[in-house]
Image 1 (cartoon, rainbow, N blue to C red):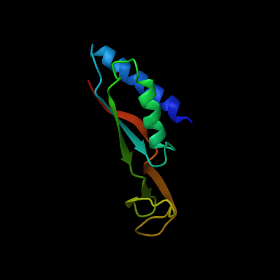
Image 2: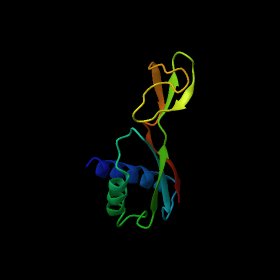
Image 3: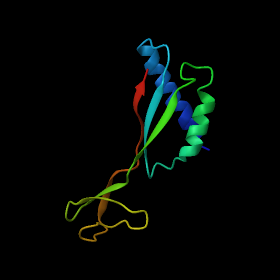
Length: 112
């Protein structure tokens, strides 16, 4: 379960930022997770709940924001949402596409 190491790293980053700002508590951590990031959201939330215990983020909520899988066609330049079963341009049907969003995993912001 790599979600445990992800949760631990997210918490360490948030705690470091809170320390930098001399914060007494963290109330919310917002995380952007792409569809292709390979993260099980329920497992990430479970791991986060365990790692936050005994820290200034003990009562913090983890808000997971989904990032859609977007592609851009190399032939017609169309930007479109990629369906999991169809990796082709929605406009010209070309399979020559670049993934431009949906693989991300990062802290969007932290409320302290």
